Image (tube, rainbow, N blue to C red; front, side, top):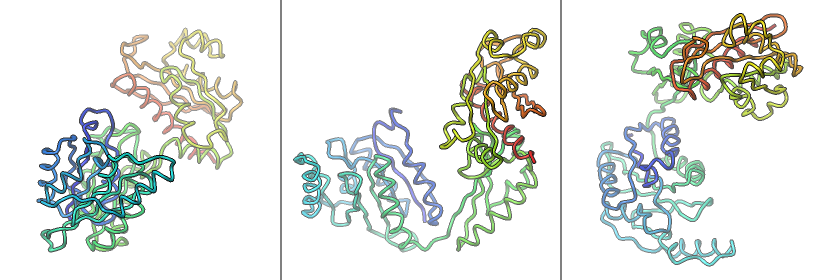
Length: 416
């Protein structure tokens, strides 16, 4: 079945908020066997909203809208759907009573403007919204190409309300109604090669139509998304598993994770499993590595702390060798290694990580912007890595952080 998402709200078009609702729904539709073919954003304008709905209703089997269900004059989703279907809005007494009771329970008198949230058209059923005041709409009318009723689902804009409504009601209803193919996806995450380089390695697999393979450049490396369609979930899972084996044989050790896994999370798990602690000293990344590590709940079990040594004077004051800086420059593998040693020793950790480089926008010590040296010191040996990131300052910092985590994971995996 073909689906379309319409995200409603002028604030989306102005860039004031990010459309997380559409991305969330896009991830939820494939397991139901629904192909998402279009995503549209439209402002709070009745004529344009009606036009978007008419186009979606004409070409899709399932239309999902988010936003525009509030009580104010610019909340126009109900009015637009009614106009598109040629039906009249009317207040549903049960919905109105429920709204008034909700406000009373909270100690407020309901503003009369909220009555519009209790309206329905003949083709619509209300979808409960325990997280807010705006019920959703479930509309069935007409027939699609497969002869099944077309479905239009209107959900509120606040992400928490929309997700709760989807998870507790809408997804289950759709699953009961639809008997289509199952579409499953799996993401394989890599670091260490360019997007073009990865695509070249996996080129023989890119022409496959089922499962399909797509390559994407992300902040934490290059992601490969496998997508399979089958009549049964088990069949799709088997197709993906077979193709993943081929991918892993081609890309081997540059693969670091899959799906929702993060480098910082995997590193934390490995440190806990091995009973090891970690400390960092950062220059060009400005503490971003320590910040990313501590994004993981429970990181205090293994992360001792981080030192931000942005100038040579501070590096030296912490214990980095003056002679190494004078001989090789602060932006060098030698100094990165000494920074890792100092972090490990001064903070009493088992492993130290050092990062030094040129974040930009101008070169330093004759080294170009994006040059980053990373070191991992475990007290016995030091692993060194060089990164060249020809991007903007914040991108250099972020990529250096993930590169360091990638090298740290490699080190931990190789430890006996």
